[in-house]
Length: 130
Image 1: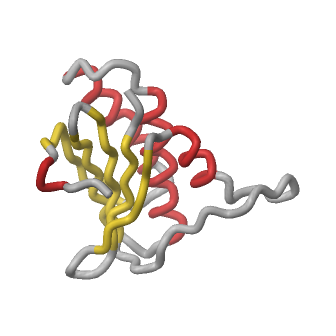
Image 2: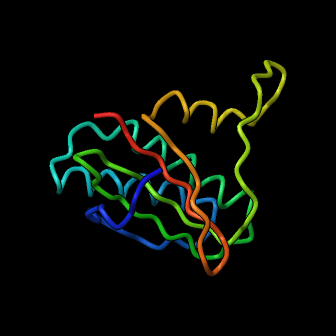
Image 3: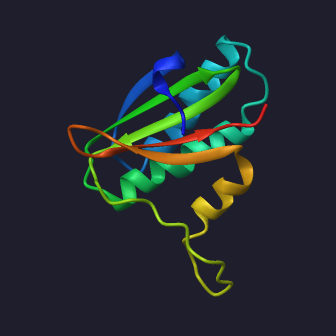
């Protein structure tokens, strides 16, 4: 689990929940990576796309806070939503047309998890490998 108190915030944005939110998140994250000279941003862009898409599609959250933290030199992507429902990693199913995102994410990152918020909702986070 990531201790946000020990993290340095590299950037933050609040997105309106829409079909365009994942694209906006990708572009924002790429800019932060470039400005902070954090290296290759491909996996980070993939991760933020999945997490923001899940909030847009599976919750009634209107504003989606997204943060990039630096924890012990590792970028950590955090995406907040107002739902208390936990994300579910689905079993592999070659016939399914969706449901692979969190499984894919788990293969791309060092670790990921969910942190409940005192005021309700949660933060889904992913620590990237560097």
